[in-house]
Structure formats: C-alpha cells, structure tokens
Length: 438
Image (cartoon, rainbow, N blue to C red):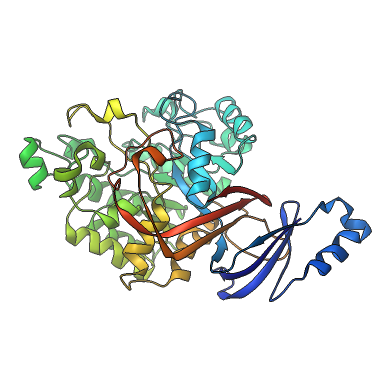
C-alpha cells in the first residue's frame, strides 16, 4: 500500500481541489479524504478482501501539489528503428521524470506501425515499461499516402488511433474513407498538417529573418492552413473524431475555432515550444529550434495561447522527437526536425500560461491530463476512489535548471538547455508504484 499525505490535490475532472490524503492499494486508489491515518490503513489491510495489500509506504507530500498523472498523446520513442535516439524504456524514463504516466506513441517507426503484427510487437514490449504506453497505427501503408491500412485489424490489435504523423495525408478521398472508418471503430485520427507544395526547406518559417540569414525558402504558413481547412471540412462531413496536431498558425487556430462549432469531435493540440518560442529562436539555437511545423511569429504564438484560453485548443502535447547530437550538428537543411519535450513540458507550460496569467493551474492540469485522456478514451486523467493510481507530485514554487547531461532521454536536442524553469516534478506514481522520485 502507498499512502500519500499532506498534499494539495487538483482533480480537474471533478473540478475539485484541496488538501487531501490518498491511499493506494495495488494499482487502484482506494480512498481519497481529508485525512487518512496509518491506523486506518492497517485496518483496511486486515480485512480478508485486502490481505494482499502489502506493507504500507508513506509518502509525505507537504508543500507539493498532487494531480492526475500527465498524458502525452504525441511522442516518438523511435522504437523500433533508432535505439541510439530513444527506445520505449528510455522514453518512459523521460516521461516519468516529466510527470507523465501515460503516453501515445506515433506510428512513424521503422518499420512503420502499419499492421496488426507490427503493433502487437510494440505493445508487447510496452507491457514491460514502468508507465502506460499506447500506440497508434498508420493511416496509410508504409506511410506512403497511397493505400489505406487495415483499420479494423489495427483497432482489434490495440491501436489507440491512427496517424501518419511526420507526413500529411494528401489523398483527400483516402482520408475521407479513413475518417469514416475511424468513426465506426471509435478510434480517432490525428493529422500532421503540412502540404509539401508550400515547403522549400522544412523547419524554419518562410519569410523569417532566420530563413533569410540561412538563405532558405522555409515552410510557408499556407502549408498548414490549406490542409487544416480541407481536413476540418472532411471531419465535419463525416462527423468523425479528428485531432489537428502541433498547430502553429493563427489562421489554423481560427479555422479550428469555427469548425468545432459544427463538429465538437474536432480537437487541436499545441506544443510547449510553439507557445514558448518564435521563429527568432532559430537564429540563437540553430538546429535545436528546427521543428515541423516551424516556430512562427509572435502573432502566431499569442494566437495559440488565445486558443488555449478559449478552449479551441484543448490538449497540450510534446511531440517529443529525440535525435542524436551528430544529427543535429549537420548543416541546417540536412539536420532532422524535432526536439525532445517530455522533461520540460510542464515547466514551460506553467511559465508561459499560468505564471503569465493566461490560465489557472487547474486548467493547465486539465490540458495535460484529463483532456488528452478523454480524446483517446484512456483510463487516466482523474483522481477518484477505484480509479487508476496514476499521479504526479510537483512544486510550482521551486525552480530547476535544464542541463544537457541531465536528461533521462537518450537525446538532448532541446533549445531550452541552460534555462532556469519554474515548477519541479518531485514524483510520479504509475499503477500504484513510484516510478520517479526526485
């Protein structure tokens, strides 16, 4: 048994907060109340039905906030394919350190997760991980955008949803069919919205000072806007659940805002780097700030925050994308896009959204936990008797320094190295076990 005492509990699903103790037995929460004594725990364990509860461990959470374990619906663990960047276990270590107890892996692995056999192989390995790992199947075979995968078979094998993330689905007819199937199977589709026709060089905003200095055309904002407009219309026509991934433009936010009035199953995610940085970061951070879609203008950054404030964007996801130092050291056009984000996401979100007065801390917890869990129908994101014992404990009044040699991830491709960030994750509990403790 695990007894967590003296913490301030935020439960966004129930819109409740206050000082409470939490008793955990096995992988379930068995009691949440203002005060739980050790005598109560012993009496609980003495009951015949609870004899397997085990010895009591007490975790003092004085000065800490307790929230549902964070849920990241957009991670790349490079497994299978590129273990030198990340694998499931190193990715889970990074996730736990960032307060995440559930993650959804994208399907652009090597080979891609485009069959039931490939998905089962990943999930069998994920079963050994310390946190909950879910995985998506691809929308198209081999991520080639030509032929649809067997959605029913993938769903039966455990696919959380479908995505070709990393690439857009350019065939409109194919995507409409995929959306129709996803609706029948109750598995959402998540889309990477960047039309290659508008991209000269990926990872830098077209027309920016950074693109000019590098002598690159960059990625025009219309690459995102055009596909978001098309795909929102398809989602409205089909009534299917759809997630617009890592939104980066003000126009994209406005399109989602209007579309959600017609189809409430439409959702959008924002990454901490898109609401923390602008295109200028490429000038100072180089390839560490190279991401797809690229960092854009201050106007876009503020529009993303406005979308978070009014509920247009209801999920914060990291797009955790590890790469080796050697890869990121290549010339800008040749370096891969992406940055790691699991270990810095909470602190960046807390700094940019809560401390600057845009949203409350309970609202941030909602964006990081129950909202993403709800979209993928995951048993997470809430604190309640009988519920999953997945929790994060943090101190919003403390700071920490992002150091290149101190990531749990195998990679360190972050533009935030050297920064002092507010909000320290002190522990993560998953399935009733302490999987990270500072």
